Amino acid sequence: MRVSSDELKLPLPSLADYVHFHRKRLGLTREALGHRAFLSARTIQKLERGEQTGLSQPTQQALGRALGLTSPAEFKHLDDLTRVHIPRPWSPEVVRTEVTAAEQAMLDDLMPSPAAYCNWSWDVIAANDAYEKLFPGRVAAGNVMLWLFGPMGRKVMASWADEIPNDVARMRGIMTHFGNPEPGIQVLRALQDDPDFARLWLTRSVGFDRGVEEPQHVHTEAGPVSVSMQLQSFPAGREFLHLCVAAVRPYRGPSLRTDPI
Image 1 (cartoon, rainbow, N blue to C red):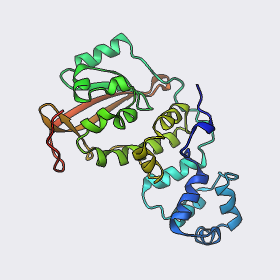
Image 2 (cartoon, one colour; image 1 turned 180 degrees about the horizontal axis):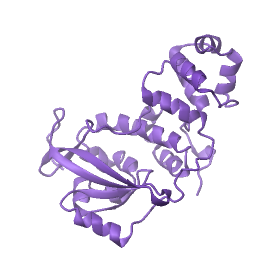
Image 3 (cartoon, rainbow, N blue to C red; image 1 turned 90 degrees about the vertical axis):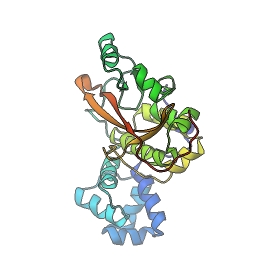
Image 4 (cartoon, rainbow, N blue to C red; image 1 turned 90 degrees about the horizontal axis):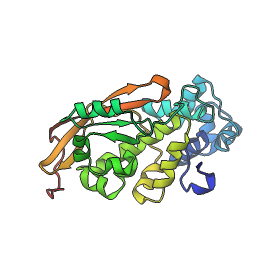
């Protein structure tokens, strides 16, 4: 079932919202922002009203600098926002919600390494026993973001407060890149009443890939560990299925609480 705009309390990623937010963050009038970006105040007004989205690459770059954007991820996000309303012919035709017997057998063959299949919207659609032990309840929750903001995710993730800002930023980046698809909107609706999620979403921070130098820190029965996920994609049929295999290493992170799982 599609989510109507009336059901959303948080803004979907859009060029209008992004320009307005950063202009207000900088305390600029439309005239001042236009002067910085070599655009008219009327053009800034049209951008903020959603009446104009198409921008040339040089104009995008000038607008991004005028808005105080600095990172490649922010400029990529700005580019995605200019086309967020345009259909993506390369987008997934099918969102996988189950695996074949052969795919499940591959997960089981990877034991004792934790492994799971996820689709492009971070749904965990199958996992082996080691993955379920490492991330208890994640398969039942169905979606990594829903699990992270649920009671089990808050308990299992050893550095939860440090983890979630980057995850919310990546959710924003991925949603926009895929054109605000319905599965992403459904996750946004499910999380919009969580005050921690809402606070982070409203910062408009954006990210994309998790770097190899950014492990997840996880509490286990044997103590905390650091986990790096290795992803292998299967784009056949544009289904964007990812095989996620966890490399579990001794804990290398900040000082933590000591209560066990």
